Image 1 (spheres, helix red, strand yellow):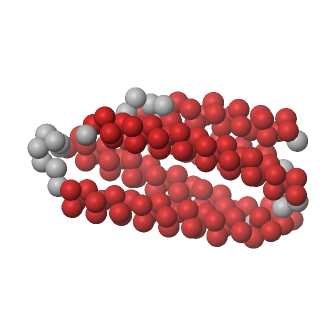
Image 2: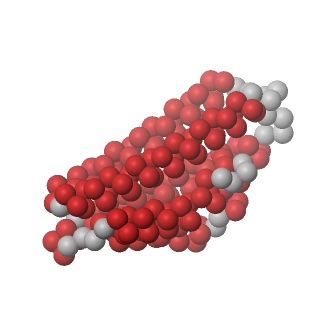
Length: 166
């Protein structure tokens, strides 16, 4: 079991690390990754979770809404990053033309979208989670901790980048 979780974590690090540590995360990712690359990365993440959980046939019937929520969340993230790239790319002099109210509104909208996506994902997971064995729950918790830790590292990196830009 531990080997499966370790292999899953390793696969996730290998697939996610280049994205997390790109030089300019907010602007460069949409240009570097095509839609096909985003889809492939999402497929890899989905396969990783499914492999780690080792769902039984009875549990597998709960999987389609989860996969759908994961794909929708990935698509919305790609869209948000594309909008950021367009906003940054279209601004001739971003420092002299700042509109803090527009920035706050854009940020609030992005947070609302992320919140809605996360809520849909949690709602999709709920029925399956109730059927997981204690061992499957441990593997899921290990994956969640690993993913959340990786996400917090990326968030911290973005915060530091924003502080440097200010």
